[in-house]
Image (cartoon, each protein chain N blue to C red):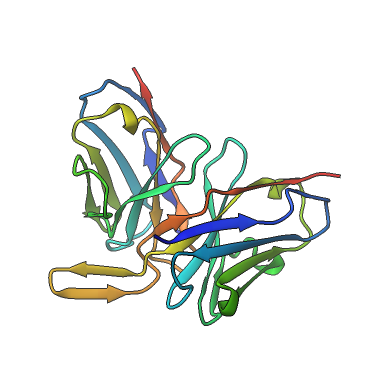
Length: 129
Length: 107
């Protein structure tokens, strides 16, 4: 079955750039949407954004000015880059596959609307000097 | 932004109880509502999507209902492994948002 694994530095200095990669195994990165979600210590879930395997993106407006997502289909990986980080960016970062198909009876609907159905285990990133 | 408000924020229950969690959207999201379960130190798990469709492998004691702005997650008979935090999430607007979570604790 499809598995996701986040990788990247666990400690980033304030004002520097946070970079994470998610490696997809057991399946192909196409033709799916892929998402990033984060969770600050003791807090709820925050949607960061998603990227389509072709490179189309949709970002959280509050992060958009600092955020870049990319996809490397040949490596079956997608990545997140967040610039100018502060302590507020300290969180567990999850990558996930977007569930983009819903069938009701004989009718099926496609689109990145139906939640995230496969998740990585999460990567803890601390922003501190 | 579409705000998602869950209630209650926590509840205490006993094995075998029927548990109901509600999620209200600040505007209509049709049926683009998803539910997750998260246990401490673990990634969330998709339970229900499109408001009422059970994700593959999820026990049938979980069910979802609602449309528009008001949604419900029901656990028909709470099992020991169901003590966790539950989140709703809307997939309607470009900016996806989660509810604040409902922690289901042992009574």
